[in-house]
Amino acid sequence: MKKLVLLTICVVTVLALFASCTSSNAKAELPLEISQDDWACAKQFVNLSTGIKMAYVEMGDPDGEVVILQHGMTDNSRSWSLAAPYFTKAGYHVFIPDLRGMGKSDAPDGYYTTVTYATDMKAFFDAVGIEKAIVIGHSLGSFTVQTFALMFPERCSKVVLVSSIPIKDYQSASLQNVYNNYINPIGEDEHPSDEFMDLWYGCTFKEDNGAEIEFDKFLAALKSESKALSKSTWQNIIFGLMASNLKDVYSQFDTTIPVLLLHGSEDTMTKDVYQQELMSLLNIPETGYRNYEGVGHNIQFEITKQSSEDILYWLANGVLPE
Image 1 (cartoon, helix red, strand yellow):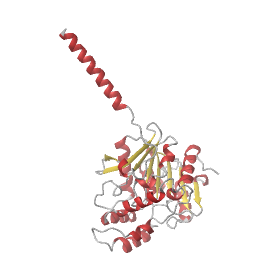
Image 2 (cartoon, rainbow, N blue to C red):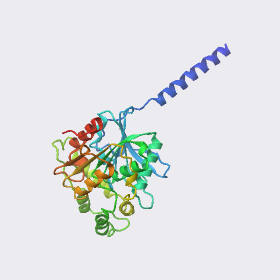
Image 3 (cartoon, rainbow, N blue to C red):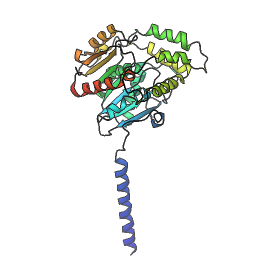
Image 4 (cartoon, helix red, strand yellow):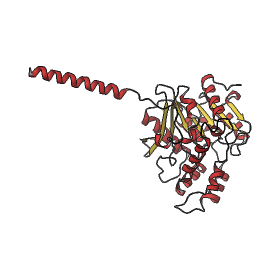
């Protein structure tokens, strides 16, 4: 009798362990969209081999092809919150990290160069188990993506650059101006003014469903989160970018990687001449370039639906829609 009881206990234990393993290996359901009110709370955290804890948002189909969305200078993952549902509803598995120093990720001392960000990105891939992905970046995020593709081409299936230029010294003067006039004058425990933040995020929504996607709430939250960064973090971001220059390594870019380039005609930061140079450096054909007339620097904010659908069409077909 005792042997029978012991045998029964063993069988039940094994079945329980098997059920537990099966449950733990099952992929959790992920959201297809997240409201602006819930965005900050939706962030997860992972420790990277580069020594920082990185915050990120994960959405979409856990079995879908992986898309990485990288945000711009002083932004955070919220930068892509309006566009992300287009990718999740198309079946992609979306990861949106907060870059070093921004959002809820760690902000250690030292300048943050594009090599720093790209190395963090590779460490993020390793930490969450991503072998290869479509990598999409806006502004500073596009510089991160360019550098990542140069350093780790085997981890990139396709590249999308939004509001980008070659990583040379083209922005040094304007960045120095921002620092001298708006960041350097504030105290160590102070933050940029509201007036500067309005200038920094100067854009308007140019599509018809602004109320539906809570654009005003989105932009107010993004401004507030960016403004909250410390003076030293602003310095590390600005001077890190000024210290980044890949002019001598573009020859190493793997031009077999498909690249899409999106540009706004009213973007004073990314001039037309720089777009042509970038197309030449990265072997981007005319079918992989679009200039949106009347649109500024924040393309994924200003024309969320059009730009997202253009990217999705290009991912599926290798060319932009006519």
